[in-house]
Image (cartoon, rainbow, N blue to C red; front, top):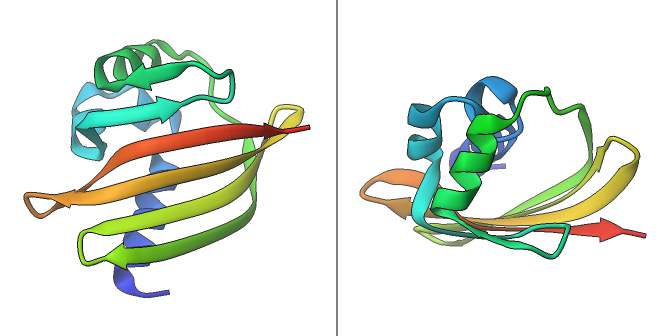
Length: 115
């Protein structure tokens, strides 16, 4: 794993931390204004919707990463794929991170429940 991949892994996992999810300044550092998420519920969220939801969360997320693969697509794009166990279900997750003005920000995320 190269330094960029390690950095993206750390940033992705930071987005699962309550203290980061509840901090508007931290979210601005991590999430692109162009962000789109396809949630495991099937709902679609954009930047304003997802940040509002994250800022309101009250509970810490208990999770376990089952597997993770990070692929640098280009100098400015990184794809992260992982399987996670949260609560009583598993889901496959994918995120795209883009370097914007020298800073890595998440631009896309998708979660798919595994039945």
